[in-house]
Image (tube, rainbow, N blue to C red; front, side, top):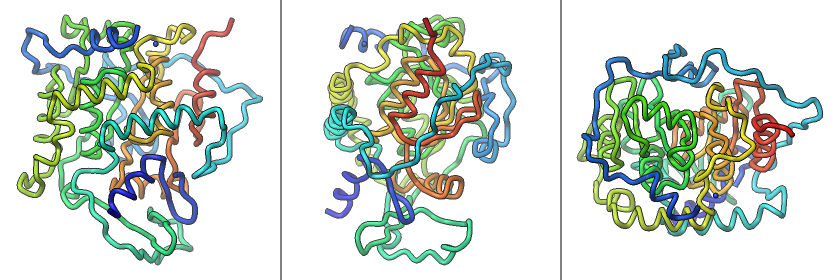
Length: 379
């Protein structure tokens, strides 16, 4: 009962220290993400791809900012923030614009359809209900959920010693694809940081062409692991690969049956399609006024998680604009929640860091507005 109650709060955003924050339709969506290719789904790259992202948090994790021929250009196009753009003050647990209520309700309904999958990391557990922060006066703060008299610290019982990639994995996908959603949810469960290369409708971006040049196919999802040189199609194969490579080292430490909302393919595809329909098939088309050079931008860093109704519009906007982005997964129990508190002094998602402009900001509506201002073509 406590876990369910906390998951509902998580889905409406997140909390920290003294304050927390809480378009062809189905045909296009299924066409682009059809997983029934005749080719082998696994290939080995002689020249693995890497990320060209070079900034604080990800440098610390991946210890590498070298770009590769298939990475977004190190000489990214120049973009600037208008002088009159006002960076919003973070307002956790607040719906800052009443007009956004329908979007939040749709996301919450989609979350319910998917049984709150990816709200939690694999092996989620409550460490204490009454956390006492011995470093309240220092900069070494930790995340906790303040809920009435409770100060809840949570973590994963199985991921602490799990292998972590030195370089971020790369996923070619788009938001409405039900096959891609399965993989994104597993990425959240395993608390992985992954670079996403959007392919709206699977065919409407330079990344789609890049994928075709590599594989001869334009189907998603397509996973590339520069750490092992392995790349593959087929969501089933990708899910198993992620579990085998970056899951708990002790395979008996968790019950694989608990992953059935993802691994039961018929259920996950059906409910993920319903969830995409509830959100109007996001990312099925490239936004008409998106800059033609958006794919050449440096990946934008997005802190959040798949299930959050507040993160969802930002993710959808990034995909429709075909902007590469790296998501730092922050599901309940994620170690990345502590890192965000250490970096910003609070836990609230979505939070973006844009290396193309140097801007960092919270608040979902303002982030979407910012992306539209900076990454679209003006008449």
